[in-house]
Amino acid sequence: MIRAGAGLLVAALVPLGFLAVFFLWPVVAILERGLSAGGVLSVLGQDETWRLVGFTLGQAAASTALAVLAGLPVAFVLARCALPGLGFLRVVVLVPFVLPTVVVGLAFRALLPSGGVISIVLANAFFNVAVVARTVAGLWSHVDRRAEDAARVLGASRLRTFTAVTLPALTPALGSAAAVVFLFCATSFGVVLVLGGARYRTLETEIYLRTVELLDLSGAAALSLLQLGAVVAALLAGAAARRRRETALRLRGKLETARRPAGGEWAVVALAMVVVGLLLTPVGVLALRSVSGWSLDGYRALTGTGFPGTLQVSGVDAAVNSVRTAFDATVLAVLLGVTAAVVLVSLGRGRVRRGLVEGLDAALMLPLGVSAVTVGFGYLITLDKLPGDLRTSAALVPLAQALVVTPLIIRIVLPVLRSIDERLRQAAATLGAGPWRVWREVDVPLAGRSLLTAAAFGYVVALGEFGATSFLARPDAATLPVAIGRLISRPGALNNQMAYAACTVLMLVTVAAVLLVDRLRVPGVGEF
Figure 1 (cartoon, helix red, strand yellow):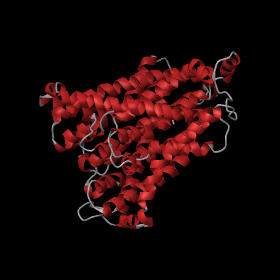
Figure 2 (cartoon, rainbow, N blue to C red):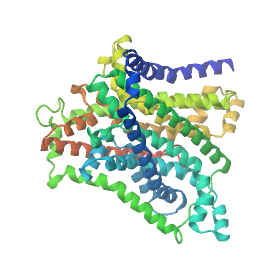
Figure 3 (spheres, rainbow, N blue to C red):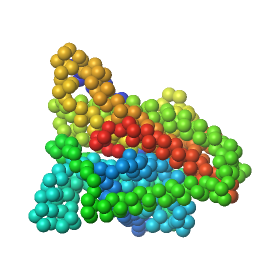
Figure 4 (cartoon, rainbow, N blue to C red):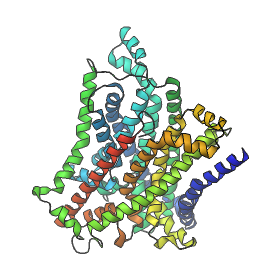
């Protein structure tokens, strides 16, 4: 028992140590430097600051509401309908969530050239329909239809049945999904940067502006503190809602609730198909723009560097850089994420207080919501103190990407590990297997598909990461999303053609990865 406890402690130190060195230290260093420079209180007292806060929260709330409304009919089809083509539907819904932000920004700029608030809200909702649809569908498939049928027999309309019976049962999943979507929308960077320009700014883009262009560290620190407060609140709300959802899943068990739609249910199916069509529209417009005039000039131009002075590497070299850094980041993130998930499951099965486990889980999610620019700039002022000066190392970008991907790995693997029947582990232990052999012989085989899913999912997210990478990648080692960002920020038809072609290439890679994720996923288990 003592040996097992010591092993668990060592395992816990791996992800916590990484979080402390590559997240907490850089963020605290930036905040400390900004606070010591003075002026934080004056920034917090400016009307402009609170206008930024209002716009950030307002667009996030509007995007969340739109994503929930669009995701509900899709969730109904995934959970309650026995129809052909559901696999295709799952893929179509998930693709937007893992598309690089710069790709989505460019797609909506092609669709709505005027940009503005509507474009930002639509793009953020486009990203997050998958979170709502798949999270809510996971619980909806466990809701017993007999309660709804009884309400219908007693004379309730379909709408009354939904609002009085179904909706309350789905509240835990809706709350969990809404909290996650709000978090993603409030910290959106690439979309707001591409579509908002200088006119519409959120806390995230303003932190970038003040840190990179104005070198206003005290102002950036003040805004980072506000953003961190909002992130912590969203994480706590999401953790509480997720706990209620997991409790509901355990209580209800898996039910066979899918059947062929009947009557008014076909209207919901039609509405879901409209949502799918709308999700495909920006993707289709982007693909068409990449072959404008049915020309492949943009794809041919990827072998060059665009208009003179735009890039220091060719589009092909940027793609190679993306593949290499995403692979390194994914390997590291899988190691950290799986270790963290094992620790959380082991602590939950032990005598550790539940609040401590939930606090550790929430802490591991923090990198999702803190400004990538804050973390990236923190790297530049802290990592020179480590052996080898990582600031000039090629490992810097994979480290930053792994920090973003690790929480997603945890969210995919953790529910699967928690769903493994404890009696199997107890039987193995009774037969003399130690804790690590139980993990190797019981947990790994049962969770193997989710591990592959997490790796594929993490890889495609790392491949398209833009926020931290845009700040840390050197011009001579730019990744493809960073190259796209530079191409669209420079004038010239050649640059635009290259940007659209590069976006389409990234999109095709994303679709291939999502197909693999859907094929390997564990049905009904996990966040995505």
